[in-house]
Length: 241
Image (cartoon, rainbow, N blue to C red; front, side, top):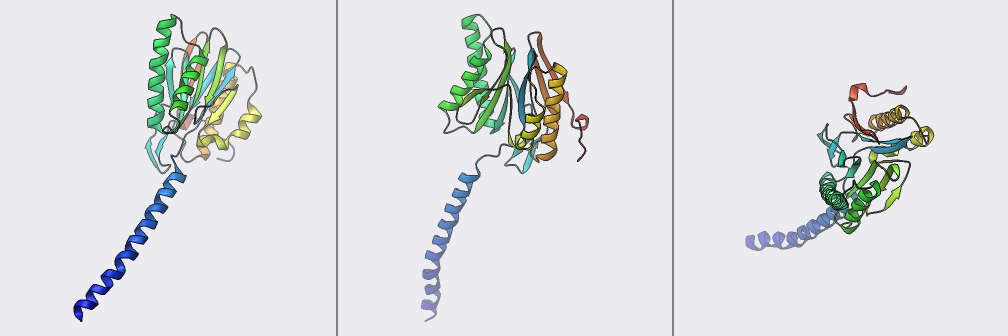
């Protein structure tokens, strides 16, 4: 009798345990697919009279919960007067920019002239589109060339390419659409555009918990490239902070 009493609970518990485990695993996989990769960042680029400003914050996070770096550089040089900002999976973005830099360098040697900004944006677009099922990264490409002057291009997740006078991206961008729409003006001066970009990044970093650190900005003109770093304690503050 004792043997039968001991065996019976084991036979009844085993199917229930297997069913519960399977349901939990299916729910976990579904949640993981819905959540995806956190894109904690703020990136922007804007054209002004004679040049372009491109910039970002410097915080890198894991899953939007753990800050893995406070000083990462998200403004990547792909050629002498062409830079791009990245948002999304850092590993994916670094792999794409590395491949793009190689292709543009080879293209420049073949053509014996610096590449156009649209060429750099098109290379990034092709890389993102050809690998759209595996990559989770988007880019803003900005620069200056002798044919078209200052330019800004958006390469979104999946490989869409779009030229705009000003654009923003990343999780922090949702907090500053109103500011950008209200304050951006075509043909601003260099100083006005730099202040506009700094204010926009400061506002986003103050409200988005996965954007922060310092503001990395690059000013690109025919004369050359200038790097501007605004430390966190030097960023402008606003009346509600």
